[in-house]
Length: 71
Image 1 (cartoon, rainbow, N blue to C red):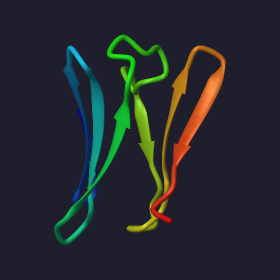
Image 2 (image 1 turned 60 degrees about the vertical axis):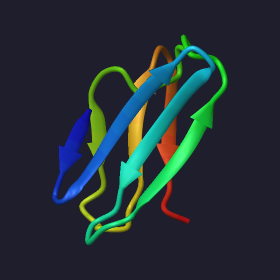
Image 3 (image 1 turned 120 degrees about the vertical axis):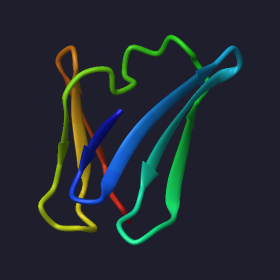
Image 4 (image 1 turned 180 degrees about the vertical axis):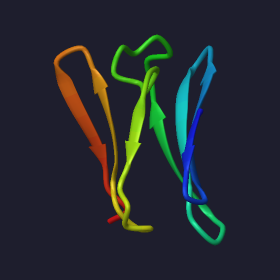
């Protein structure tokens, strides 16, 4: 889990896959499903939040940079 400025990012893993949940400032959430529960690209370390309330969330996994935009 990571949080910043009223926003949070959670990873919930299950045997069928994993869910990445991003809460929005002021309520609501976005959910993305990963079908590989041990996926190395899931956020497992430091997560960076944009200063913009609707800005992207990013994380590194190995040599890859992942960016989740609100759009």
